[in-house]
Amino acid sequence: MTSDLYGELRDTPPPLPTPGRAMAIGAHPDDIEFGAGGTLAKWAEAGCHVTMVIVTDGSKGTWDPNVSPTELAERRRTEQAEAAAALGAAEIIHLGHIDGELEVSMALREEMCRQIRLATPDVLLTHDPWQRYQLHPDHRATGTAALDGVVAARDPLFFPGQGLTPHRPGAVLLWSAETPDHAEPIATTIEAKIAALLCHSSQGTTTMGDAHAGEEQRAAFATRIREWAASAGEAVGHEMAERFKRLTP
Image (cartoon, rainbow, N blue to C red; front, side, top):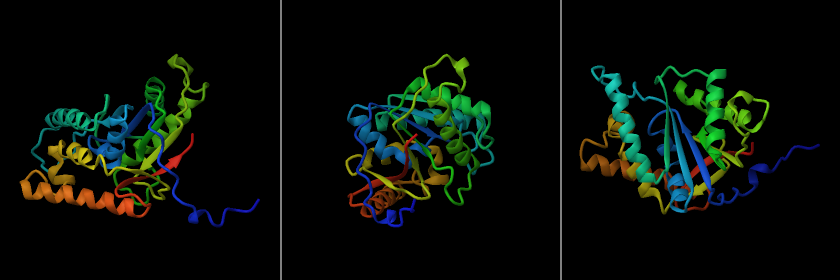
């Protein structure tokens, strides 16, 4: 059998139909919003039941050594609730693992499997664990564990003691993908994505260019997000887009 020598010349596949149920799994509060906030807001607006799974507590997400990790984790839960509301998400699940200490394990795989079988998503979104030079260990571990969980959730002989029906999502979308091959247009929901991101005020210094220092910085951050989405869209013929690697489980 010959290889597909011209696969790179094929057009990007069309956007997915609005799923009935979608699940996004992010390592920290705000990861989902950066990776897929516009897509999830678009689907939620069209009636999709969106579940957001936050794997760690976000307790190390600061450059200030004087911040209490416990207080930071609580603040980030509040911010996540506000961001989910901005996107129209129906449900947030906090798994509560310690920020920065996440490890791929059979226990984490089972936890992911359980959440997928309970939520029965038509589409699952998460980090690309194969993204080249991804520095944060929680991002790598979350992507790996989520995909391991997809395989376990679909096959009935994995974790039968859960007493849950196996479930196979129709598609998996990986954000920050090393080799994206799928795009979702988000021009109509880019403002919802920005609003959701700005709910994460504790992260203004670490990931948002001091967006909470004043109106000028806030506007500059919003402009950067719009420019990023426009650049992603231009590559695939959309006004604005989020790009993913698409897998079929």
